[in-house]
Image (tube, rainbow, N blue to C red; front, top):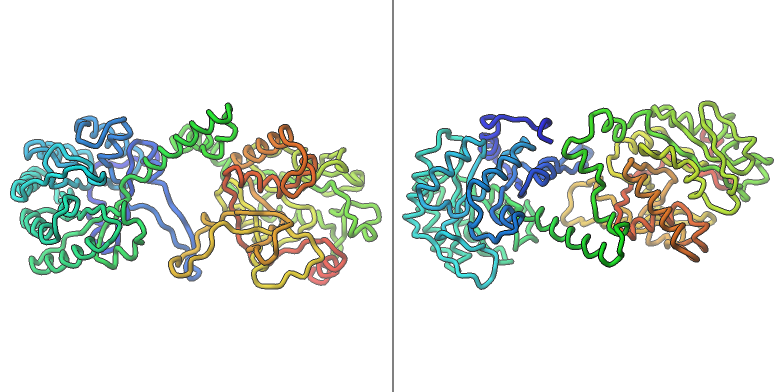
Length: 575
């Protein structure tokens, strides 16, 4: 959003040079318009390493000739004029504080390049990268295209002319060496690197379309030796589009200072748009395409259409978030102990189960609590709680009880099973989550043998651990692949504890999926014998199958389900 990222050109321009001075790998991603600039500038993942909070984000943006041209419907052959490119650059700069590196193609002739440098520097761009090809260039990644390189001395003179017209030392001119693209050997690339460095270039990008890193690594090693010989310290840049199996750590170890993800946002957008259009044509409606699309509200939020009050109300962990406790069913297992009362009225150490839940919620400033009753409705009581009734609870399921309170879902909500005791901090952690749908999942199922006797809602995590590569644990990677009571305990990675958070968007997705299933399906539905008796986990699995992202918050103990007399005895001992 423009107003949230206001920065003057002189404050932005020197950011890249300052980062390079920190001697760490600089991570860059392309942007081709204002919206992609917002996404790239705001992208962030957070996690933990050895108990400490760690975050990753992109350090700078790459304004690519390829993605700029393609987004305008043109081939990457320098057919888009510089003034059009400059308009796109200004559009992106207006929505982010990140520094920008511009893909300057060949830079034109020396006269054209002087004007390019002058305009980019005044705009607040941090660097321009030009490639040593003859104008008009052809994209480097397409096989079978003839690539003609410019005489290195002519290209070096272009660099000198550009350095002479720039007004600050902060602006960087970087030479992109295309020797490997043209099928020339390492010796040619090093000769060109020496020539450009002596001409005063501020850094070198070495380009290759090989999937093997051998060429890149050989050049990187020789480049460091060349810098030592010349007594210089100039960064080395790479674009791992074809050799994308290499990690940033591997590239940094090889001697690269900057890594540019040069076209991924446009490629992702192209694939998504292609899939959505085909999906709508196939189904003759857009419902099936919704999991492939961002909600309109997310676009409104990104570009600043929503005011601060509405955003705080929707996203903030405040007392405005509703809590729904579906508690309509009759419990056959504990019936002898209930004496005709709902399970939520079961007394544990002198207080009802529901009162203990309300206390945990209130400790987290959650006071808008709705209980959906059914069996023994007249005996359901709790101070400060609204009670709704599911009169048809015998013919439905917990999911139907939840939908009785759908009006409470409008600004997002927490769903809590009526037979769960849990520690207050679990709710606090859940409120900190920012994903649209988050289930709380206990990981202790990985560490003890399942003894049976209870129908547990098991979870299988989508992304498995990769111990040889992954050092950080990121919350955004915690995705549910499968959920249900029929999952083999040996295959399960977690157990769903009966607590979930839905943002406003997540709630809308839940209700829309439920209504579509009830209105258009018949017979068996996931684990339910009939769709009329589908449960919460059935709907969640259906949402996963449709492409919605369901996350989980991992916990380790700190909760108890009151399902059997043994559970009640244990709870009384603890409390």
